[in-house]
Length: 274
Image 1 (spheres, rainbow, N blue to C red):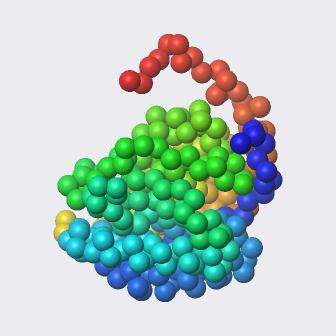
Image 2 (cartoon, rainbow, N blue to C red):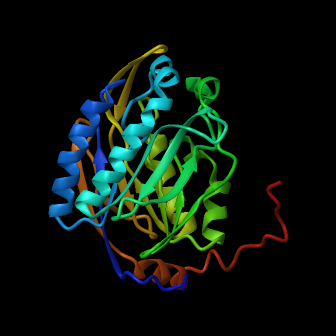
Image 3 (tube, one colour):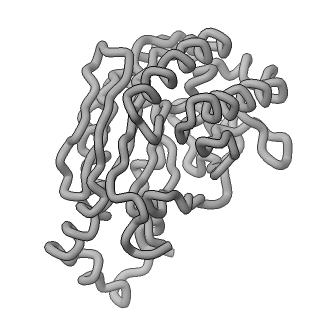
């Protein structure tokens, strides 16, 4: 894709969602209302948080992963019905029929435009014992420009994001389920990834409380849209469930990169990340 994106502005909507654990029908019903609202508001891209259809009940997810394909198909149909791009991480099976945490992107025709399986599993939460890791990065060639895909814990691995920007990424999706007590980590990390790579970060997070096998988890919201200069264009409050809207001026990527030439000034001859 050319360095200048075909779309100059992109209207995005983040869904900051209190996910009903193990109740995909309830979550899908809420999602349809939000997609209708976002479409009516002129949004082009709607992003849901991590594992937004089921939450993190490991037993439920293991038992129902195969049948969850029907939910994925429902999301595809909703994208087509409301003619918007839809992204979000969901329960799925990988090619080896293993349970995975998978970010799907559907285009306005309902086609599966991109799939990314979470590569960095959160060992502190036991995700590595219940999910299979992905083995590849996914760069989406979208009308607004190349877009990198990532999920939650990935944000702690800057090499992943630098890899995307070196492949031409101008925008990054990061659906998440970041909980207390790591609010300040979230705020710093999302902005840092935007600043150091000089691209937009689209980071919808869960909100509310979830009962898991390891105890109660409290998600703090703070969904964010951050521009390439590190300015926050949209920010969700801790107790808010609903939509956040932002309009991205995609020329800002080139403006920032021309003004502060950090990406050009790298010295990869001096450092390797093997």
